[in-house]
Length: 202
Image (tube, rainbow, N blue to C red; front, side):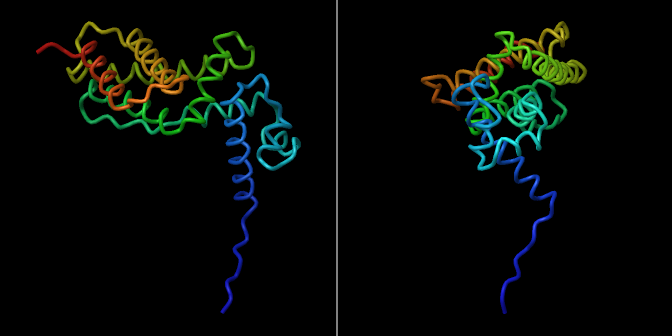
């Protein structure tokens, strides 16, 4: 009996092409930032032509948007009745994601640096995503206020800004040159900081 090759569907082929293009784009951006990266370079690094990159994404802006979405993805833990502990687990998940997905994390933080430097393409992309992330964090803080784990005078919007600064700045240190090597210690101190800042007094 012979094995019959499984023919991939058009959707599967498209998904594989997109995956390879995104991986190539993230690797190139991680090394040199987005300004020096062209669609032709991305296509060549992925094993395709410039045309396939344009066909998949339509423009450099759409490609960068897809890179951002992929690079910032992480599995946020679920709320289990304690908002403060939920915040600490989110912080831990974010930092471990940065450490484990270094090429994509470096690409994300490279793009963030370019957005801060007023890149006209990246600024609005980050503005939307950062606003969404702050809203997510503020919602977690409100849950903690409601369940009594977070002190009652905490302002959720302000706390969200502080928390975003904590995880983004700590993430930068994890991919800096030289990088922070002791991830468990960093996670431990970050969680301790969150508890000290927001814990409700008995």
